[in-house]
Image (cartoon, rainbow, N blue to C red; front, top):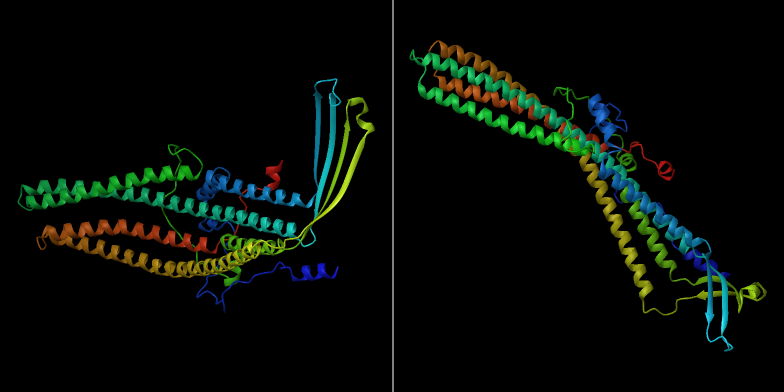
Amino acid sequence: MGIILLIVGCSPRLSDIAVPINDVEEFSSTGEQILEDKWWRAFEDEALNTLIDSAMPRNFDLAATWQQFLAANAVISREASNKWPQIEARAQTAENFPLNDFTGGENTQLGLSASYELDLWGRIGTAVQAEKFRAEANLYDYRAAAISLSAEITSTWYELLAARKQLQITNDQIETNENIIKLMRSRLVGGQIRSVDILRQAQLLESTREQHIIYSTDVQILENQLAVLLGRQPQTVIEINEEFAPNLPELPQTGLSLELVRRRPDLQQSYAILMSADRDMAAAVRNKYPRISVNIDGQLRSNNFANLFENWAYSLAGNILAPIFYGGQLQAEVERNEAIKQQRLYEYGQVTLEAFQEVEDGLVQDVMQKQRTANIKRQLTLSQQSNKQLRVEFLNGFSPYLDVLIGLNQEQQLRRDYVDAQLRQIQMRIGLYRALAGSFDTGRSLEEENE
């Protein structure tokens, strides 16, 4: 008994492993708005909410990740079955020839055997714990995939709205440039316009038409992409009645750094993988201990079926399997698992640092992109004012049409750049929300799968 207590006392125990980062600092800045689990609702876009809600049960990639979790959950039951006795039944009947021989005639056998390993050192229980952590890792992987899907749908949705806005802008610009050419041709006869000015304006018109082709292509491709994300065929028509009019809310609360570790499913996944490696190492250590098992075997045997239940026998045996010399194989396996555990620990630390970086980068990019968008808007306002003045000067003969053409080209480009900047600002905010997001209900549960 003293030897048993000594071995159990030396066995690795389940430990709560802390983040391997010294002096975790808080984030550099924070907002006031509380970010809910379904983070995309912060945009207050009902059409977007409907799209994401419909995608969760329909997206095939997400459904495949859920099945991966179910498979890992089944492995737990498989490993846990080793805690129970293994019972087998066997039956055999045969007709032996020649019948006049002493071995001839009917031979019938029925048997029942059971074996059970006493898990004194927790080897089986530790293996079950390892599989539980692996199943948790798969569950967190599913939740992280749900966040990625929601972010991809949100980004694609606003890219599509922006592309439709750009298409509308280029339509207006094409109409404007065509009207200018008509006006210029009417003035060419009077000598107010040179033919080269018309050619330059025609070149601007063709350049705008090229942009129209690009945005038309983008709209169709983004519609296909959004349909597939929603679990639909790419040729499915998605009704879109919204205009691209971004109105971003205030910055969200970042919370404490360690709260992020407990909230983000990808960090929880990395931690679960680390803990499974910890249990694998413990199981490798316990494989060095003796295994004690009990075997029971019973058998009925007779030369005819009528007398089968009159003759029976059973045996009860206890076995001890103690590793003595494996050439260092078991110790090498312990060292291998210990190295893997350290590897998972460092990976956990790296993933955590990268998560902190994503939040910090998101905060910086959000603020800077807001400034850039405001700057482009000021440029557009100044360009519109200067073009208005250039047109007056041109009509009064004080400025050549080339100045008007250059100004018009710049103004039209700035209008497109402003939409791009607004879209970029939304994408920055999506990245920040995703970096801060935690798990949310996707509508799937083990209970529903088991029904």
